[in-house]
Every structure is written in C-alpha cells, then in structure tokens.
Length: 256
Image (cartoon, rainbow, N blue to C red):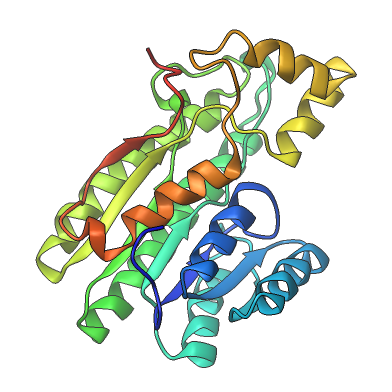
C-alpha cells in the first residue's frame, strides 16, 4: 500500500456507494479522515459507520455538487470537523443515458452541472484552502474512456468528461508552484452496483450481460472499484509527489 495519509483530510464526492465508496474506504484505511458525500443519507451513513468500525474517521455531508451552496457546505464540513482539507476526489457523476436524437437540453445541462460545474466549484474552493494551509494538496478527477470513444447513448457524459480532462490540465498548471497536484484517472468499465442496475434495466439479466461483454474486453474482465481506489491512493500519496497533470489509465487496456 502507498505511504500513509495520517493527518490528512479528504472529501470524496459521490462516495455513498460504488466507486466513490471504495475510494473513500481505501483512503480511510491509509489514515485519512473522510467527508462522505452524496444524495442518499442512509447509504452515506452506512459508509461512515463502516469506516468508523474499522478505526477510521469519517462524517457525512449531503451534497448536490451542481449546487454552489452545497459545494461550499462540503468544504465547510471538512474544515469544521477536521480543521483542514488536503485531498479532493471529484468522483460524483451524472451519466445522462439517452439516444442522441432524444437527448434534451435539460438532460445535457444536468450532466454538465454535475460533471463539470460541480468539479470546478469544488476544485476552486479546495485550491483556496490548500493555498491557505501552505502544504500543497491533491485533486483527483475520475475520468473515462468515453472522452476518446464516446458511446452514442452517453454523448453528454463523454463531452462533459472531456471538459473535465481539460480542466484537470489547467488546474494542474495553476497549482504546480504551490505543490497542489491535480491528476486524472481513466476508468473503463467498472463492476459497480449502478452499472449492474442499468444493464439489468436494459437487458433483463444485467449480471449475465456484463459477464458476456467482459469476456471480449482486452483483459477479459471488468475493473473492480478497489482497483480504481488503489490508483487514487497512489496518486495522493507522497510516493507520487512529483506527478501532476497525469492521465493514469486504469481501463484494463480498453483503448488498445
């Protein structure tokens, strides 16, 4: 496991289940205090309890990341409870499933509000606090292969994530002199509960569909949330102290 994160405080958006939960649990296991966020309080409190039961520190803060007040409240919760902010993981995402011909402007705006506007608001606020602390910091943006080969039923998602990738580079340049590192993780096809639910809605037996499709991927299987979480834990560790503006591809070769 990468070097410990004792004394550091992390905010992980969309961490009440799935990929965000795995990231939060991994950072907590490395010693960081966590602010768990999302829209479902029951699920969020379950993650908080699991971290606390394992000896970690965590609190819950509900947040719609497309909302400026909610973004401010999320950072404020970290400062009020733990006194600092060292790590921000922009994981919350709206997928915006829709055929192109049926996509509405409202859905497009909803996806961009979560995937781009929310990440911008939180990163800008995190930079203010990290500069005030004077000890650097880390921002991780969770990306996707859809920036390079967007699915026709996820056009708004792919476009919004492409904007997030551009934002990753700009913030990395802005924060470099202050030792604030900003990195991106390319995620491929991850076996999350939400993915299983979606494929079950589309194909009836989501587990069977995913197993069949996974057999044709480059490495013959889907990624696990824990594998993505391991990449995050490395990038925010001191072992990655000279890495910024990086695109860490953890997609299992899906772009080969």
